[in-house]
Structure formats: C-alpha cells, structure tokens
Image (tube, rainbow, N blue to C red):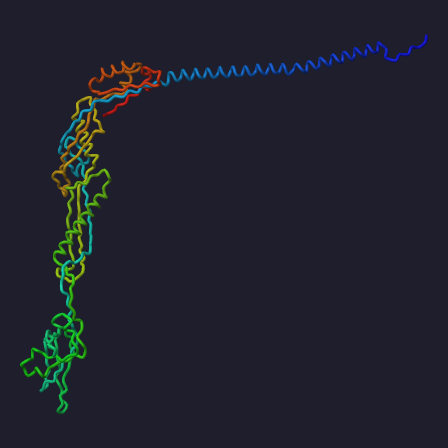
Length: 435
C-alpha cells in the first residue's frame, strides 16, 4: 500500500494538541479567575472590619456619655443659701486700769497689762546771738621810762600807774614798775631806765598814736614830776571800734526752750521705736525730766553764736491695742443674751486717758466700745434640716427656726435643672451676710 503523505499533522495529534491547548487555556482562565476573585473578597473583609470598628466606637462613646450624664446628674446639684441675720448694736462705757504689775487681761478686776519704758537723750546745738553791741579794741605798745632824778634814787610804781602822752592820750601799765636810780659820771647824770608794756584806757583808733613822750600824771606837783618821764620808740597799735553781736539772756533762755523741746521729742520717738506696732504709747503717760541744760557762754558775751547742751530722761507707759480690744469684747460677750453671737466686723473701741502715774506704772482709761450681735446660727444643723427641700420648703424651715432673727434669705440651685436641695449635706452651702 502506498505510503500517505500529510501536509498537516494527523488529526489525532492535532486533536491531542488541541485538547492539551484547551486544557492549558482552560487552566489559564481558571487561574485568571482565581486571581481576580481574591481582591474582591479582601474588599468585603475590610468593609466588614471597618463597620465593626465604628460600631464599637459609637457604642463606647454612648456608654461614656450616659455614664457622665448619670454622674453629673447626681454629683453636680448644689444649693447655696444666703441668710442675712438681723444685727443689734450693744454699746458700753467702762473704766479700766492699765497696770504694769498685771500679767494678763482681767475682766473681773477691769485691768489690762501696761509696759513701763525709759530712755535718755542728749543734744547740743549752736544758736545765733541776737543782741547788738559796740566792739572796741584798745591800743597798746611799749614805753621806756627814764629816771634822771638828782640826787639819784630808785622809784617803785604800783600796777595801774597811768602815763599821759604829749597828745593827751592816757595809757596804763598793768604790772608793778621798779626804775633804777640814775648814775653820775663827773657832772653828767646817766638816767636809770626800764621798758614797760602799756595799754590805752579806752578803745578806739584814736589811741593808735605815733612815737610820743609820756609823763606820769600822778607825780604832777612834786619834785619828781620832771625827773621821771617816758618815751615810745614805736607807734601804739590795736585800737579800733565797731558794731558786733552780743549774746543776751533771752538768747540763752530761748536756746534752752528750743533744745529741750527737740530733745524731748527725740526721746519720745526713741520710746516709740522700742515698741511693736500693736502697742499704744499713752500721750498723757509720758514723763520727761531735764537732767542738765547749760552753756559756757555768759549773757553779754560778744559772739556771733553760742552752743547749748541739754540732757533729757523720758519715761512712758504703753499698752497693747489687742489687750484693750480683748477686754472690751469679753465684756460684751459677758453681757449679750444667750444664743447671740458677737459680730467682730462691727466692733469699735476708743478710750480717753484719765489719771496717770508714770513712775508708779499705772494709768486709768475710760473706754467707750460697741459691737453688733446677732442670733447664733448652726450652719451644719441648718444644712441637715434642708436636705431635699425645694425653695418654698427651705424658706418655711428657716422662718420656723429663726423667725424674726433674720432680715432676708436668698436661695440658689445649680445647675439649671435642679429645683431642690441635694440629699448630700456637703452640697448644701449656707452663707451668712451682714448689711
């Protein structure tokens, strides 16, 4: 049989190849479909996951809001109740003694402690002279006395011997004078001499004379007048006159008054500086003693100014303002009716100083004091009685308890939805106000 030749593959082979290709194609399609199905499934899963998250989130938020609401509903409610008690003023006058021997405030004896203080102060100050006077200077110089008396003999002159110049100006020697006797040399007489300081008997420039000849007026009319004489080799100098300031008795007294007042003030200031701010220094309980007051300048002294010195010892009594207030408050408390309370903000106290014995450490004080008093209100007890009550009930309860002892009541609840006092005492606040 002749051999067949095919220009294509045999059908079997082709079929085989086709099946295989179909299988391959089919497998490829299946693979492709699987690949395309995976993202779709993931998207569905992600959507479900997100939906679950937000569900839980909003449920949680709702629970929190509900919980917070419940908490606020029961914890926020508050009641603030303001009561204005009626205030009655009580006034008193009382005499008490401030005594340095007292250790504390004694209401029964009407005594408060007082402190005794003492300080010493010394001052000196220059003061101007106000008097007017004439200032003069006396001329002075040296003269030589000649003893040419014959027969020769010495001369003695007492202190205060006067010498007259040939121009008529009188000078005086302050010391005792001894003039030696003259000596003879043949027929010639040699005078004995001595030099003496002299001063003009008056002040003024007219005594500033040139070198002059002098005689001794006390020898005039005797044989010695012409035997004893004097001369000056130099001019007399130092004589002058003018107006000057002079210290008067009034100047000295005025200086004493001024410096005593100033030193006393300094001593009082020193006393106050020893005290704390709570102490009161009694004005009438300050004793000052001038231990010394002097000046070395005498009235009539020519000077432009002079110095004065003063020494002062000051003593005083001082008490604590808190002790005085304590006595007054205790006195008021002892006098107010039961159930009343002292209103400290309305308390006032003043005093006038009576008799004072500084050295003895005692002073009498006349007190004038007053304070407001009001009905005692127990806030805790009142708050307990108002738990759970509304506005009208609270007003009725307060009115029943305090009646005419109050002038006004104000009630406020918080927050806005609250219309009655909480059942928690700590949430009910009672405040007292005074007009």
